[in-house]
Amino acid sequence: MLKKIFMPGAGQTTDQLTVIKWHKLTGDTIKRGDILLEIETDKAVMPIESFANGILLKTFFQEGDTAYVGDLLAYIGDEADYLELEGLNTTGNLETQKPADSEDSKILRASPAAKKAARDANVSLEHLGQISNNIIRKKDVIQYANSKMPSPANILTSYTLEIEADISQLQDMLKRGFNTTIHDTIIKCAEIAATKYPLVYASYTNLDVYGIKRFTAIINPPENCALAAGVVSNCLYLDNGILKERSIISITASFDHRVIEHTYGAAYLTCLLDYLENPFKFALL
Image (cartoon, rainbow, N blue to C red; front, side):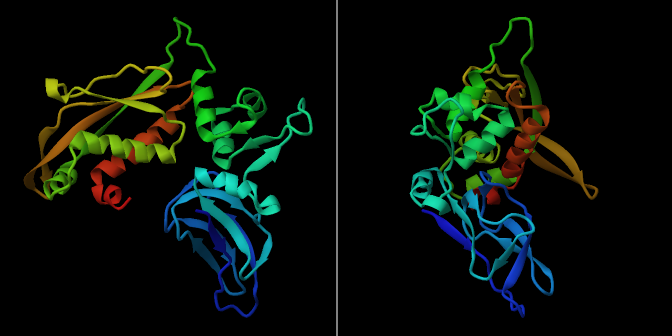
């Protein structure tokens, strides 16, 4: 369902406000409480937070523009809302453009999430439109990006990154009655993290039953990432001079560097680590 973000009143002496900075871009995944933009009143600069979860589908003002209290600033929704936006004519959000070699009746339609993924992967929407009937979704861009480059046998196309997660809090949470397992939770956290880093299309490999602490998994196309989890180990550490114990699990990620560059892969793993070590964030989603 579409959610509308309006320009709020802030008790200022004028109803005119200026858009100073957008903190989120069209196509970004939004969580309740995220700061969407900053506006300037006649007295101060103030942030505007999102009251909803979803995708930032459309914005109606650019930085430096003047708006009035009550003006529609943005739409937030999900993939299913794109068609509804398309029916809103000038206020819709499903962005359209005509390919250079198309007839007037053939319009290229790409969702904001698809356009953002295309920018990240350096994919031409015009070319993709020719093979997708001119309606492009984010998943279309990701699938195309995963398959667009053949893998020469003599070129290494993957790299690996590793994290060690302290899952002591997660274990405590599971003991309190959550009907799931550690590895099911890792998979769920990996999926949630992937909503923030949409180029990651991953598979999951688990060898803890064999006592393996860490290993590197092979990427199987069309995936561009493989996550490998080892056995949970109990480790001792000093906390202000007091010897304590915590539970550690190693997760190694293999990435296809043709699709996911190193900093993007590192940011994805950092996001996954945050969910695993702070399970209350995961539980609230």
